[in-house]
Amino acid sequence: MKNSEIFFGKDILSLDQFDKRSIEKVFATAAKIKKTSTKKLLRTLTGKVAGLLFFEPSTRTFSSNSAGFKRLGGQTVEHQNPNVTSSTVKGETIEDTVRMMEQYCDLLVIRHPIKGTLEIAANASSVPVINAGDGIGEHPTQALLDMFTIWEKFKTLTNLKGLMVGDMLNGRTVHSLIRGLSMYPNNTIYLLSPKQLKLSREEFDLYTKRGINLIEIDSIDQIPSDCHFWYWTRVQKERFADKKEYERLKLSFILTKKLVSKKAGKDTLLMHPLPRVGEIETAVDSDPRAVYLTTEARNGMYVRMALFSLILKS
Ligand code: CP
Image (cartoon, rainbow, N blue to C red; front, top):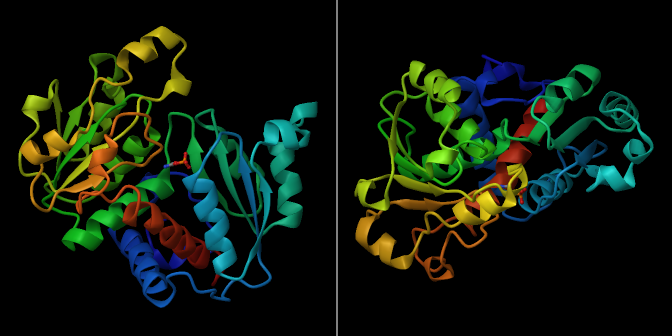
């Protein structure tokens, strides 16, 4: 999707589909929706139906997709746990489930625990499919909302210095966000994680070849003092075969009020895709730089509304 005019009818599977122009188109549309409708009902998608199939649990992605589609006047068919509520339980394949859902819906939003399944689903579907997270692969709409949040604050996505903390190996939001920021010149991201959870060397090489400057650090002391954003993430319990190892690693790096006072800049955005499970002290929540429970989460709905509009309206 290297042209902003051709969102119509397209799948959204990876940040790699986008270029700067198509990202700007999403942002402009999201900003317009945000301005005209904080919680107002728009009616641009009246008569359309979206199918939401979430094979993994979700608070934000599911709810913001569902609310966003309804706020555009559309309706949704929802399977929050298809492994229990759909005929998946009887052995139906993802291809067949998708082929059925396309009979009833104009667009499908799917989350699945296995990387690559969204591509299979999109290939089987005649209606557009949006990747709402595929295992340790990608979470493109999360990256778009994160980039939108950074762009709203700094009015640019170039010359940024950011920090990402937590599970770089398994964190799909991180994978999509680095892909997105790699499209813009002169961005540097510091990556802080336990050594077991560093980016795979394959991914590290893939991203750095695109020109983004990735700097792996080992300790909180190495965090630079003047970042545009901190992007904290949780260690992804559901990806660990060895739960004892998860317990050992889960709270390796905690975002505390003390750390914010010591290392964050006056404008540093404090971000997290959520859910958090102990890696951000609740005392940080009231800091005006903390956007994870407010702007960042709310922007998810506007960005998803923008994508629905662009995909379904010619
Ligand atoms: N950020 C995110 O994907 O959150 P959920 O798992 O709650 O959707």
